Image 1 (cartoon, rainbow, N blue to C red):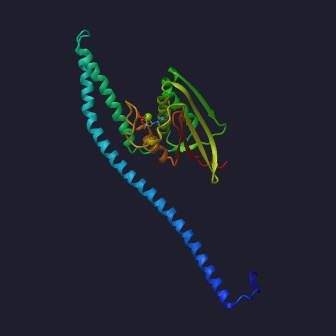
Image 2 (cartoon, rainbow, N blue to C red):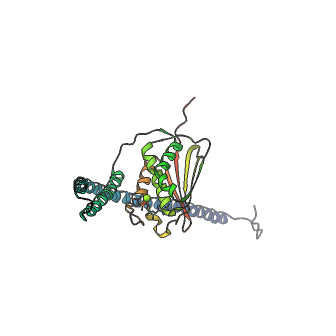
Length: 282
Ligand SMILES: Nc1ncnc2c1ncn2[C@@H]1O[C@H](COP(=O)(O)OP(=O)(O)OP(=O)(O)O)[C@@H](O)[C@H]1O
Ligand SMILES: [Mg+2]
């Protein structure tokens, strides 16, 4: 065979050079691939590490909060009980009546905070069963419906005809959606549209159920988006910041996933996917 360019015969030396060149090129390509894989693995390792550190911090925080909450709860119950007794004993016209009433209101606010905190930190054994998401979503709606009915909030519900059942804990799932509906309601400040869509999707040969909760509220400041699932992060005056962390915890324990489609100034969509329960053989 001759060299195409200068018509000279190809010498052994040429072949040697070419062989060397091609094996070097091969090595370079292989190195590049290895390097890319290494970078990917490194990135994943970094993410896992950040996640684990976060989990550890959250676990420590959870334990601490739960101890404090338990310690505070008993004295609080006594304060509330005695305040109610005083309230009944004090004549209506006395100014002290108002003071005791304030104590009662504030004590119940603190009790609510404690029960939210204990809900979040409690390691409740899940009671898994085949559950119907439509039923769960309707129940969650009815828990917030008083608030929704009052203002000018339009509800749009779109359930697919066939929604597969999922394996889950009914009560905990109701808590997930009532927290999301509450947040949506609070973000819309009494006016807007809350849309719910539920549909089955197929991914990698498995079936999932996708639930989208969309509001037309304020959206989330992009700078703070990374904080929303952290306990005690709240932008609300009376918020404790435990709603979304609890949502996250419950969804994760159901092997579900959460995505957030944030449209600052326009609204947010929370998208949750759960694996469908295995279809029973008929
Ligand atoms: N639908 C939403 N639209 C806009 N901002 C939201 C929405 N959902 C959550 N957020 C933001 O995320 C923060 C955290 O939400 P989360 O439910 O955890 O706590 P919270 O609602 O402030 O208090 P809590 O739920 O304990 O009463 C909120 O304070 C708010 O800033
Ligand atoms: Mg909330």
